[in-house]
Length: 470
Ligand SMILES: *Cc1c(COP(=O)(O)O)cnc(C)c1O
Image 1 (cartoon, rainbow, N blue to C red):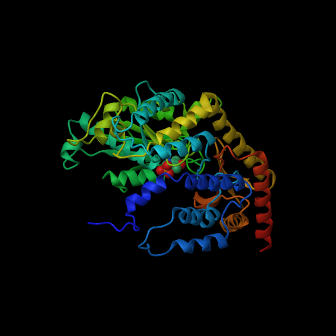
Image 2: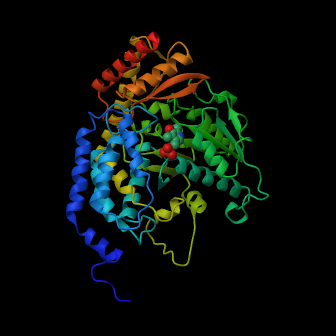
Image 3: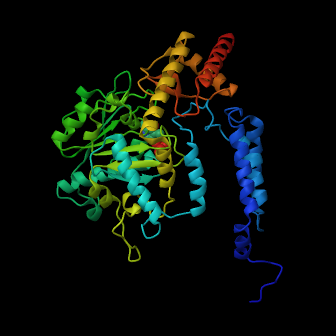
């Protein structure tokens, strides 16, 4: 069919845009504006900025969108409505900042747009995954030969670790879950602490292990599993431990529990989303003593390590158990003698997020990882001490980077939290701890300075005074 000369078909237009370097200059300039303003921007967007997002709610137009207009829309309407997570006064959830070299590497690697599924699709991604696997084992002091899969976050990593564990235990009992499914399989017991993260429950439910037949072990006042309350373990048991409770930061007693599990033939998975990195610090590595005796570990690089989203890692002592659990095949899939990343993750096509993890580790170095982990800890302790000196109650032992604060009752705590959030001077979230409301602080970014903490403490004091006047 003859094409009207003036109306280009979409691929012609896109080919032209791909060569329009000014477009990418514009993106860079907007990004630089954002980076320059982030420290002064209020930590949470104001109502005007959030109301401005309604402009995005429109039907998809039929005609082409101008790429400059697309960028403008994002920068002028999107940027002001972002939460300043890369600034120094964001203490919500457990959200890390972004390491400069990793951000820059991400920009470059985004233009590569590599698919990290197979060596044959992306040798660079395969090599970097191989290298980082070795670096991580060294940093975290895990057994030689431990395998790493690079996934979106700890939720997926946990799913992979528990799948590997479930299938491994059943294989030892002569049962192949991959082939036979769970129908008629011996029953797997799951033992976990009362303080387990919600993503553990999600993984167990997806895996067909349910949420009601789990054996929940009571936790102590810090959220640590009470080791003496753990029932008899056996070779049909998945034991799930935690390195870093999401509220208190507390660590389970790995030394006692991993050894017991090993003797009984159980599989131990450790949810170390943000806490496992303490293994890299001499000052803090007593928290994870014995953790190397577990079988699988999930950890996030996008939290403590300050790598960009989304960077999670599953580590598994038995390479075969992991790859067998996540294996798939097809006549067009070409495995190589090199590392084929898809064997270690549920995804086939996957962005080469490893570039950012590699750049993060390379930028920090071993010493930098350890210093970063310790710095977050020291700042969390300073935050806690300053608040305590100003009449706030710190209800956890600040063993790592999480601080929990309460006032004399839940109602007042919630009021103060709301006022702190409304101040936009800093941002903290809330949680329930032993049925009482608490304010939770996570010091998780290298961007946070002692001045940021002083300024945030002032916001806490002001909020308390205001709440008491209400
Ligand atoms: C954040 C977190 C998770 C979930 O990790 P994602 O990367 O958000 O999927 C699991 N466990 C703990 C302890 C966490 O802090």
